[in-house]
Every structure is written in structure tokens, then in C-alpha cells.
Image 1 (cartoon, one colour):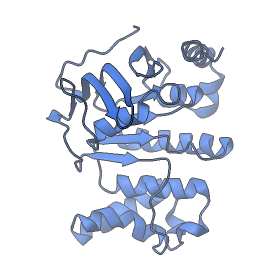
Image 2: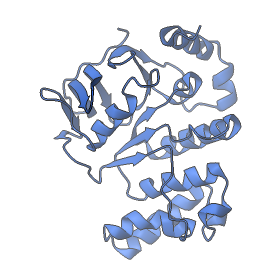
Image 3: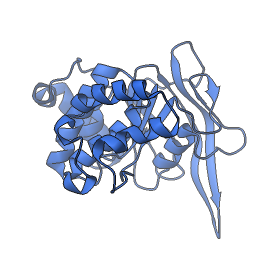
Length: 263
């Protein structure tokens, strides 16, 4: 395994997944994950690729603390055993959860207000976020008045206002058209380069993973396990055109495509 990560905790480890497995028992038992081990360092951008049904989203929900691994497996986030959601971890799903009767600004403020952060702090955070999200001119608009890409940027703002140290993204742009998705990848990269949070992204897009990531983890068919840990040695900051025109970018896409069985 190229650059395979040990699950050992270090001073710079943000996420540590060790011996994680998961079986869902309903009418028939389904083994979703099998002996998954990897780490993500503080400030790293790591993507997970894998075929549909291999347990990528299950794994992300474990890192979020929404579900627990089977006995013997452990997930640590920022040195803490992850048994429940925490304010240090933010999760963005494919479908936004904006309240349709609230404005963009009100939706972005909501989580911070629910947690009773001081109004002054919320005001300062929102004023800093709106320009970063390119939503300053749309702060008084309602979700139905926005494009799909703008709604996803606002959904990202709902999480970023809490200033999580770890950002978990579960196919956040998967339902959008290809052009909008590419544009939002550029925006996401710009935001990350400004804020430098630890990011774990679930995606089906090989080119998206290569463009955004420091490392790409590839999962097998179910039960999912990590079969490759590939470091993406492309210079940062990444210019969209120059990066995608680079010979090395094409090589990474081809190697990952081969691993994913799409060549």
C-alpha cells in the first residue's frame, strides 16, 4: 500500500481510525466495513474514493460520532474517542438542511444561536463568512431564490460558522451538474487554503479527489477496507487550469482509475 497510514496517534493526528468494522443486522446481516485503519493529520485534506455501497458514508458517520464501530474498533478525533458529535467536528451532507422560511443569513447563524454563542461573536463570524462564501449580496434571500451551488455554499456556511477543527464532507456537490460542481471545488479549495481545517471528503469523482487532496484513500467493494493510500504531490496553492493541465495530474487520475476499475 503506497504511503499506508498507521493508526497510531501522534501529536499532529486529527483523525485516527483503528481496526474499524461494521455489521448492520436487520433481516439479513450486512458486513459494511472490515478492519479499516488510517490517520489524517491536522490541516490535511484527504479524500475517500470507492464503489457505491462500500461503506464510505458509514465510515464518515463513524468519524462524526453518529454511529459506532463494532467491538474492537476505535475512532479518535483530536485525541478523543469519538462516541458522539462534538462542536469540533462539522458535517456537510449531499442534501442541504436549510430552513426554507429563513434567509441565507438566518440559516447560517442558526447553529451558533442554538448553541447560545454570544451575539457579537456570531455577528463577527457571519460577516467574515459571507464574503468568503460569495453570498454577501444574497444574505437576505431565501433558499428557493438561490441556485443549487449557492445553496450548497450556504450549507457549508452553516457548519463553518461554528469554526470546527475537522470538516467532514459526504458528497456535498454530488447532486449538482458537472460545471457547478467544478466551480464549487474551486471555491472549496479556496476556503480550505484560507482556513486550513482538517478535511475528510467522500466522493465518487476521481478528478475531484486529485484536484483537492493531499492524499486519496481508495476503498474496496463491500465489506469496505482501505486498499490504497496515495499521496498527491501536486504543488499548492493549486491553480485550477494549471493543475488539471499538468502531466502529473493525469497520471494520478489514471492510477486511481485503474484501482477503481474504470480503465
